[in-house]
Amino acid sequence: MSLNTAHANNGVLIHAGEGILIFSDHVTIEFSGHSNGAMKGSKQGRVYLTTHRVIYNGKSETDALRSFSMPFVSMREVEVEQPVFGANYIKGKVQAQQNGNWEGEAKFKIVFKHGGAIDFGQAMLRAASIAQRNAGNAPPPPYTPPGGAWYAAPPPAYTPNPYNYGWVPGAAVFPEQPQPNTIYMHDSPPPYPGIVPGAAGPTGPAGYPYPPQQQPPQQQQFAGGYPHPPASGAGYPMQAGFVGGPGAGYPNGNVAQGGYPQPGPSSGAMGFTAPPQPSK
Image (cartoon, rainbow, N blue to C red; front, side):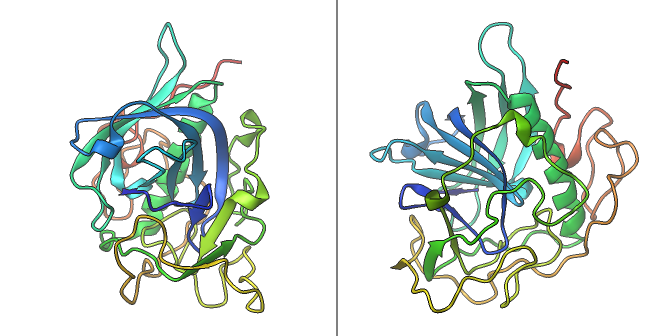
């Protein structure tokens, strides 16, 4: 997980080959169990579920925490809570990544003020399961900050099923979409596994046209919050693709996937607890 590395021009900054699956414009996020001053207090903003992670972007330009990136491989003990009073929320623990502008581990709580916590949680669980399958036997490599220019993301940056991976997130609960001029992309592929097999190549990933070279990048600088340019080989190594539907017993199956030890029978993939089904 990294701090202040996923925003640009009051918008969200994603990797090449990363797509946005679900967007909610009305959430509150809180962190506990840490000593980082930027993560203190309740934050108002928006949340993105992408093909590789969960991204929070703050709405206040003066807040020390502008963005927060939580790759699926860095989260554990994720649960959806339905309190008797108050809005539903997602909680869990997230581990800091090397060069991520903070250290240690923190607990997080994302409150969905306008609803959608259950649907978001279900989609997160499914995406995490697929990402784990694509991770293979090797552990995630050290996080390397992306660098270089970033630009407006080419379409389709926001779509429920950009890669035809046999699963469409329940985005109908979230009718709002991010404005086209608020999604930015850089050339570095994701340094951690996602639901898309393999890493982005020099010609651009499937479903995402490579940005036109005749258009100059909007800004020649390193992504916000990064202290130094990346080293070579920032991308996650090529991974085996996900084929077909989920494994037997999904979402609470106890089948070993991708070489990662699985939790008990009451838990979902990667330490995620399967969220309750939405009432009809």
